[in-house]
Length: 74
Image (cartoon, rainbow, N blue to C red; front, side, top):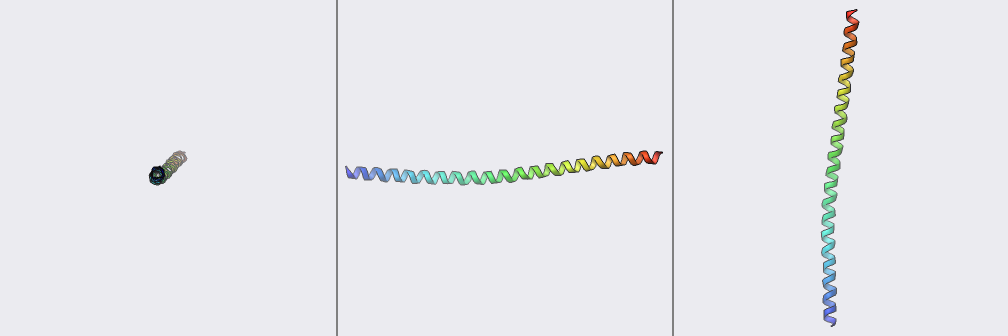
């Protein structure tokens, strides 16, 4: 009986180690993917912000042209 108990304890211990290794690997890849997605998200936000600023600048320049043309016509 003691041999069976010892074998069972060893089996359970090895299974716990195996589960720990698999969980650690999963967490590593999850963290790596999360960081990559956050980097891509910030890059998209930055591109969107720059596009918005460019559109606002173009609208201001167009408005300034309209004002200047009307001032020249008078």
